[in-house]
Amino acid sequence: MALEPCTEVPAINTQKINTDLAVLKERGQREVFCGLTGIVWLHRKMQDAFFLVVGSRTCAHLIQSAAGVMIFAEPRFGTAILGERDLAGLADANEELDRVVDQLLERRPDIGTLFLVGSCPSEVIKLDLAKASERLNQRFFPKVRILNYSGSGIETTFTQGEDACLGSMVPVLPHSQDEPSLMVVGSLADVVEDQFQRLFDKLGIPVSFFPPRRAAKLPPIGKGTKLLLAQPFLSDTVRSLISRGATLLPSPYPFGIEGTTAWLKTAADAWNVDKEKFEEAIAPQVNRAKIALERYRQVLTGRKAFLFPDSQLEIPLARFLSRECGMELVEVGTPYIDRLLMDSEINLLPVGTALSEGQDVEKQLDRCREARPDITVCGLGLANPLEAEGMATKWSIELVFSPIHGYDQAADLAELFARPLERRRRLTV
Ligand code: SF4
Image 1 (cartoon, rainbow, N blue to C red):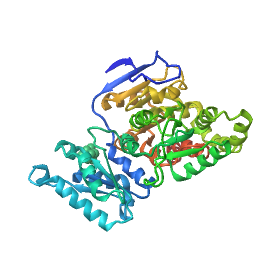
Image 2 (image 1 turned 30 degrees about the vertical axis):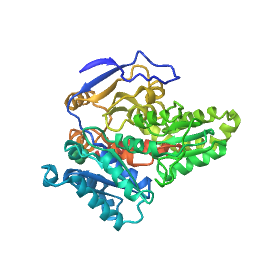
Image 3 (image 1 turned 180 degrees about the horizontal axis):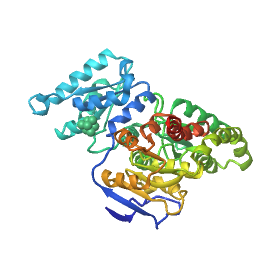
Image 4 (image 1 turned 135 degrees about the vertical axis):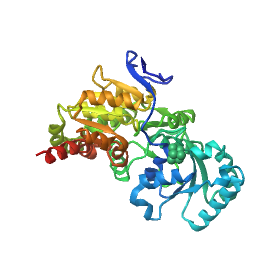
């Protein structure tokens, strides 16, 4: 355990950097998902894509448990299970993979883009999925485009799976004619995307969303593209997009009323939208959101929150909980801090907020028990044991699977934290 300055000071950042920031950096046992879990929300977003995990039965079990009931509804993901013969090098894993892909594409003519998703076992036996997609593209492109990325636990943590997936699409984005346009980066629930589309239309800003709803309809990119991030965990994707000529608009993330306003204002300023037009466009939604949020603010205000590292959403959520819900932050843990993507948020946290990066789970649990927070945000593996110790918990995975961005979702987001407190109150006799 060591107290060190925050890592990854960005090379490209126009914002003031909080150089005094001290972060507790820990390396030890971790309680997190691997990047394969990203498939659960990505396959819902891109409706013509299929995700084929090249992995073991463990990987298949993971996806099935994370996706829950969805496995029964003709899903657009599956696992090509590496058998003992593949792992022992007795079978030609490439031939086997080609055979599985043949069968799959024959059975499912609706697939437009096929992602080959690497896992720990495929990496350990050094199965080259980049070569495999090249080979398969020669046979199936343009009817089907084959891409590949790694979702393995060795390389990725939870939401980094989305970063890796989007990163694999960047090289195939069409080149724009460099005209100015806005690209919102990070998967959003369709209903939220529609709300944002309407707001950008009102502001007169031409916008595209990445990932798109159909993987075959990729948004163009070029020197005129300005990037506005909807999700804070897209470090590699953003850097790849910048290397294709785009410019990043640093901004807080659209969580809560304040975050959403700051996010939209960043885009509005880049398009020189005047103040009155901006205020007029957002006013009805802001007013509605304020009324809806008030109820939960009353439940949450003055309560102590402790966030375990999980999705990289922790810092923006902590900012929302503290500034809009009046909560006190005991510790804000996050798996990884990328200053390029996070400075706008860190600058909004109360001075002296205890930030931690990485994890040594036993030590973190000790700190949590000592602080006795009113609510602990953590993964499923820790939630029930902590509940049994008398602590109220919020499962962090729900924050990734639920629509929480934008004005209309601000109260729903607060409710996710208020609900466990309310449940405890009701169950206490
Ligand atoms: S990719 Fe690795 S960590 Fe993820 S389920 Fe498969 S074996 Fe486990």
